[in-house]
Image (cartoon, rainbow, N blue to C red; front, side, top):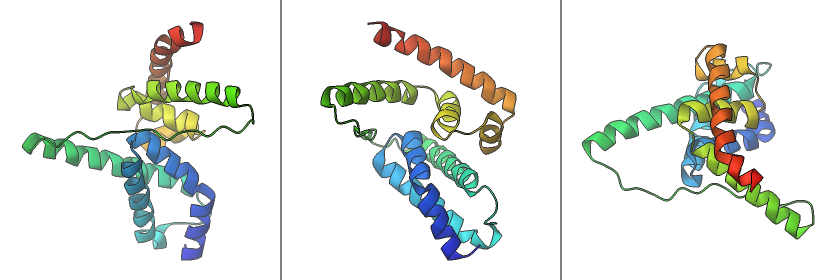
Length: 173
């Protein structure tokens, strides 16, 4: 793969990759770092990548593995010397309909759903993000996460049940 082909992949899939990084990390600064690290790793492995392969899926798996490694390192370091907590904030979804009230309601609904998803344990949150946000199949999500497809289905089912019970009062009330 050439640098021009990688630039084309970044132009086509970069926004989706960044959005995934933002949802996984729940923090804009951490998402920025993860996004950069993902493409640095892709640049390092550029000679091994094939332009006709599913590069978006590959980049999502790289981002996920980098995030898991970072979390593992962070957990190990916090056992040695606990780190200070920092403020995590999700990005906002801008309205696009022109109706201010409708945009406000949609933004509030998105905020509440994102908050509920981000509150899920990571083993349930990651399949939800890959399946719903990245529109991946169960098999693709399983490959990226390195687990069997049945496990992804089970975790999606559990996540849906948890989200349903969490959001039930909001949508009925």
